[in-house]
Length: 420
Image (cartoon, rainbow, N blue to C red; front, side):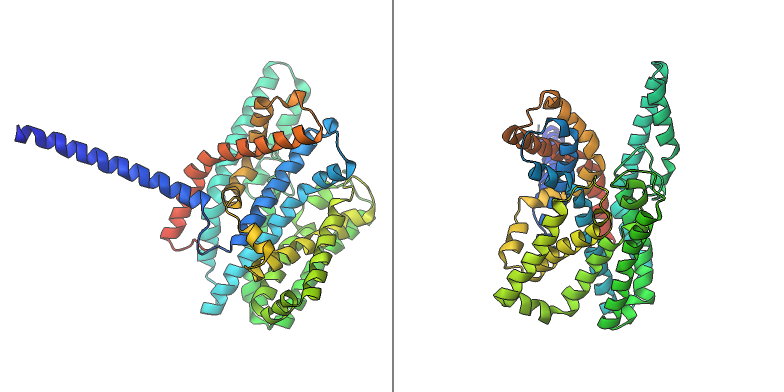
């Protein structure tokens, strides 16, 4: 009996170990997703979360625009929440330049292989998985349209499919294919390609004042492009001029550079920042200025042809976001920083990349589940269903994050590449 029991006992023990391993992995997954990490600047999670919530609320508002039954000013704010993308740009500029600057301070050089491998492991897996699935969906839609003699729909799908190559080589901001939102990923990748070289060859070799002059000179270039494009009269699309102004890298990289400027101030002008933070009149004046920048941007009509809204507005907006970013990361004890560091924002921030990629499809699922066709556009039902939509989108994003992003994050940790 003892001999016969040994295999049973051994097998039972292995089963317990296996279950314990599964339990530990599940626990670790929720820790990685739900809890902030010690290495993180907590306030950045809040800013990331607000950036993706802004994008979702903007697209939710656009979908229900004809049913909205509350104040025009609030509707105007929601219609301008496309600016969540600009907040992402400012954050990306800050984080990428921060990592590069810290490496430069330690080594007096940049490891390009390490940087590009790190970015590839962060961006490529989730991005190319999304593009591949979406391309297959597009092919299926084309086949369905052709079989059902939907000629106009088939022509439109065929045209977008023919431009899908742009997304695959990160030129989606110049060649729009199936996806109307992946242009921003292309813009960020173009920045990641250029900025390390610029930093190593020029920026980081110069003193703070020279570096700031270079950055501000570069910062003005997209504004000049926007003025030239707007007043040259060669516009195909209507305001907000997606093809000519809103999407292209050369008209939009100023938001990314504004994040770099914030990084430089954060590391190299702490005494000045601390003085502003300590002295109440300075602090309140600065906060009022940055708030006014954002409020102005939120209350403008993006479909108006008024020149300011398609030129200077982008600068006013990214300066406002940059100011709040600088204040949030410079004083971890402030009310702003503590609010943005709240744990409720961490899972949304973790999922933000997956959410951004898939949100149109997942919001379509929410549209069906919540019966948007009979949506009441008054204040409470509108916002109640948005909260439910946000929850549905987050829940649907979890498996993709766990199955695609998280394994490659672990691979980055194994290669010691995990710092952003």
